[in-house]
Image 1: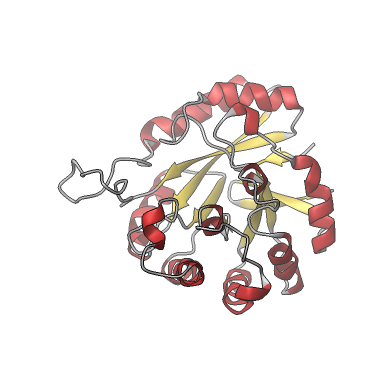
Image 2: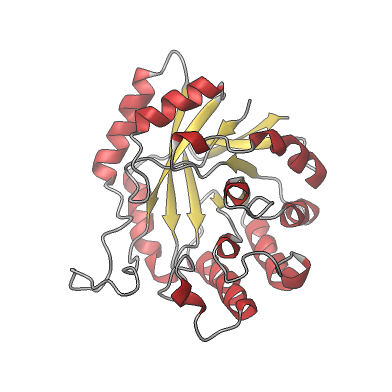
Amino acid sequence: MFWDTHMHTSFSTDSSTPPDVMVKEALHLGLDGICITDHLDYDYPCEPGTPSTRQDGFSDDFLLDTASYFPSMKALQTQYADSFNILIGIELGLQPHLGSRYRSVLHDFAFDFVIGSSHVVHGQDPYYPQYYEGKTEEEAYIEYFSSILENIDAFHDFDVYGHIDYVVRYGPNRNAAYSYAKYADILDTILQKLISLGKGIEVNTAGFKHGLGHPNPTEDIIKRYRELGGEIITVGSDAHKPEHIAYDFHKLPGILKEAGFSYYTVFKNRKPTFITL
């Protein structure tokens, strides 16, 4: 079985599942290990139509309580030290102006694994329909991909970039008119930049859960990353509930092998280990 190295617990605003419940389910499924990667998104906008209660206008959603999170994860590691592998990660919601704040967090806490992700694009989360107002779907997707480049230029102290085509989960037509070929120029630029910095990407199987019929990113993007010289590939379900842990992981061997990989990657102490399929 695989490691599932992208999942969330009740330390993330969008999950209500206690960490120990996620661990018990992963054990039940027979996984080799997990990495819990709860959300930290500074300057996350309020839900459209919902007024902020803060002076800066932002939401308290996704402000990870690292001072509680890290020792809680350490306690779980100790509890299961003889029976199950648990790593401590974090998913950073990147925006170009947040680099110094995230560097401080990573200096203070010794995470095993850091996912850098784009959830907010120029002040809006594509999760909400308001992001797409006044632009075509193609323009909205291009803006999202362009924001990834802006984020990488501003900050790259992460190990992999998460769900590179997250935006297609929520677009007006989702991935009906979306393909790697249609956005190849900008996607190649993203992949080349990540490769030049020694960064990886993930196979995020939540795309299947969301009914896209593909992981995030799509198989063609994963294959293109490998063709361009990419070597680091992690796997994760992006589970927020126990029933979604290792979601459709039976598809991973075929996806990875078709893309040219004979292994996948797990990070510990921010160092990659390559595990043969």
